[in-house]
Length: 272
Image 1 (tube, helix red, strand yellow):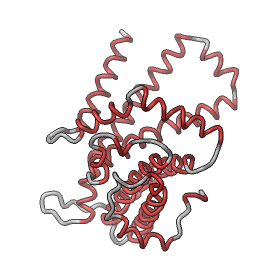
Image 2 (tube, one colour):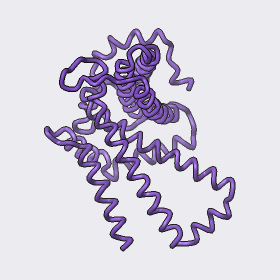
Image 3 (tube, helix red, strand yellow):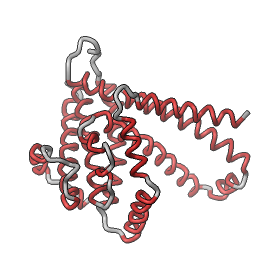
Image 4 (cartoon, one colour):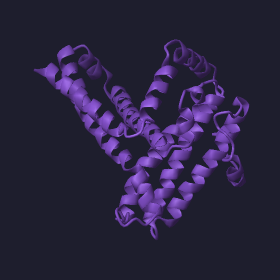
């Protein structure tokens, strides 16, 4: 964490830094700016913890903002390492649009769930590798296991989609009084939100630490991945996705939920 460690006093510079244009920021300045954003994110998380009992709604609002800041820091950290995310058409909205940042956080929530499963499989392999290898050699058994896993994961992802679809509403309820939706957030709900968002932040921090660490093997993987991003047109595909998300009256969460439902139905059809 040495390269990402931030002195607490640096967070005071954030106000001035936030006036700058993140899209046109020179590559050599991206990492230092990311550090300031991380400091602000951590400050907001500490503020949330401090008021969790007296004002759980406000605490949730601070946690959401903290997570949004981590999303911005992640993009800048990646671009400081040779990626070109800020050059993607419409990506400037990431630094202005809450909705787009929530979707990025949703992706990392899903990634976090998958990484936990990978850890579980790794531990199981360490305990009884021969048993695991026997499963891999049994196509029918593997098909049943994979389909069962996919159904379970789709259900989990649907739950994450519903949660993140409510993020902006939770932020507004936490900070503002609105007669139409003024249902206070209690402390128990705060802890549920905290567990989810802090987990996502840890996933993003892990990626930032990896990219801020000098490692010859990882550097080779990073360079190969950067080339793939260009040669396989991933930036263009990302731009198309951002364009669809930014369209007015488009509910990206509903579209994603429907896609998962259709995928689930396709799996079921394959079982018939």
